[in-house]
Length: 141
Image (cartoon, rainbow, N blue to C red; front, side, top):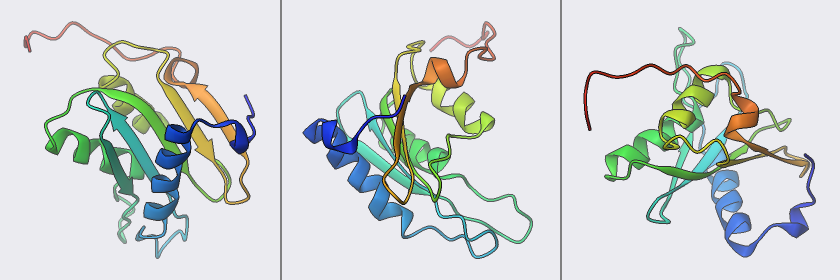
């Protein structure tokens, strides 16, 4: 669903701005594809991440970088995701699964994807990952 950035709430706009800013810190010397992510947790704290590449192309994606910061802070739930790329790309399949892992089963968690030229699309994690990989874990939290 395309949505005019002017229609974003003040909070959504602030989170999106954090993703825009951190995107400029990405280390993407091989692909030159800069990605910034900002993720809000259950305590309303925002965690940011950018992609970090290496010569073996086994780098860290921005979404997983932000999720790592979220986990390191002691948070465990994702409430809102923003992603900024050159062309408004959505998270890759692996990152979608990582996002789902921390959505506490809430398929309605919003995922905003913005391109450099300001085109903004809003999805839910359930729309991006309709057939999530799930199994019953023997470990109880």
